[in-house]
Image: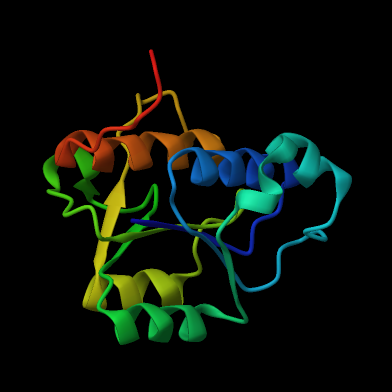
Length: 158
């Protein structure tokens, strides 16, 4: 599995997701330029001392990112509150790249259209009163659903 963020905007979210990526041994892809420096203190503070262990991959734009996935046969699953299919009704193989949009704008329409043709566009179910979830929460929910479906286990002690 891979986690991918399209032009992230909030440093602590990216830092939290980076920590999740390290703790789950999952590569993190940053697609396009974030709205902040990846060296910014807030990103590193949220990621704590995990940055040295992070498998970080940077892509100039969506086209480069998608081409890199296609070259190694990684299927793309993007998340959007505008998707009609629920992630609860999707069977994850555990090999997917999970793509998430910007905190304030989500994914651009041209990307969601591309994903509808060449991947899967899913939503995380939420109650009627909720417009959207926090990005780092959404990534964690999706990541662990993939693990749950594939019975991925970890070596840490409970």
